Length: 253
Length: 317
View: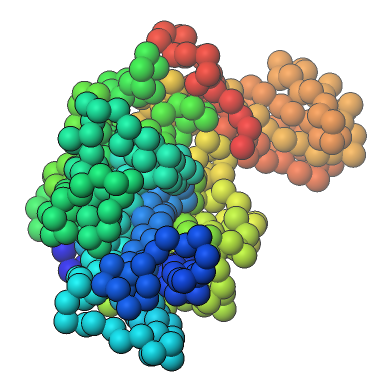
């Protein structure tokens, strides 16, 4: 397994994908912080003042939105194998294909953690000096600021695992990226509307991800943050398992 | 070491894709220490068979064993079997050296192996270039380098000469024979053109439409082929030679390049007839394409059977 992990790690660091996407993730994390601080107090912005607990938590968890990049990176890391037929040498060297998928999941979780750390770091680097310049005191000890930071980090990390899961299942890079983004931004938000699904809604992937940072979503009640994290991880592993069952065990193209 | 060391045994393998039978009840053995040509027209089932042997595709029925076990049960297979498959498998943005290091890690061999195999295939100068900058021939060399990473005893190569320039083909020929004859490895190399591998292989496995046509040495193929050999003769006076040969009941037909194509007589018979008639000869040799004609005859005259139109033999690319 250590051979496979080394091989999968090298696949990540020997193309530009990982840092290109990480720069994108960091830019999005900074954007979220800047928007919230810069527009606070402007007319028609309903957000509470910068010194309130809820706003501080929202600012420090806003880097979670960079999960878009980590989920796409997860998808690309696995689907590129099928796109460029590198799945062949990979599975020739390790015919126990489940182990390859497992190594991919572990390495993508590591990549996701690095993304999460980078995004949280830049959001702190922007928000902390800016808030202190405005004379706002940050309440580190309460109000979910630390929870928000950790939640954002974990959301970004776990979504990379989810991306690998979806990629294993769908194999096609374009299809997996489009299906994932369409689901997260169009389909799941609509699922808050039908009353039947409403009870199950907190267990859906995007809602579980939002629960991690303690944010509310479309006015619905979410899971406790640690449960949200586990549910999201569960989705990623479920997709990977289904992918292994349905496609990876079959003939390799 | 067991007696199965280096041996590939394919037993009654059938592989169907939907209603298409790509391979039908195919059995053959590949021995170490020689180069075995795996021949057949395009669509004959060569690639499918190789994919079954390598565990990338599951046979519908039958078994394929490498060193006595199915490929998927080999421990650390990268150090036992190396493979080059028809479509090359590279990430375009990764450099050749990094490509090899990725798989060196997976095979559990030290990183310096990457530079060693780059030197073996003559790609050292291009080691840090991304693969997307590589020509088809360079990609084939890199694919071969990947196969050699684990220093495997068994090599399975699908159309490895594709895209190589003439110099590369000569190099590959010598290299494969060295691997088999001097180092005792098993080399199975597929091609759809017999003449391409005629000078490389010691024995052949010929399939057409998924079925075995012939298994044995090239000499056996020549004997069993039962195709009249063609002798090529060049002379400044072809008309006189045609007449001389006709007296002996031998037919000679002029070819487009001015030579004569003679069937039904050996070079000795033709040479003697020319000498007796006082005819000057500039060339007298067996046509190099004789074996190719045996191959064509064997693979084209098969009953249609369950073969399907989209997998019919073709001779392009």
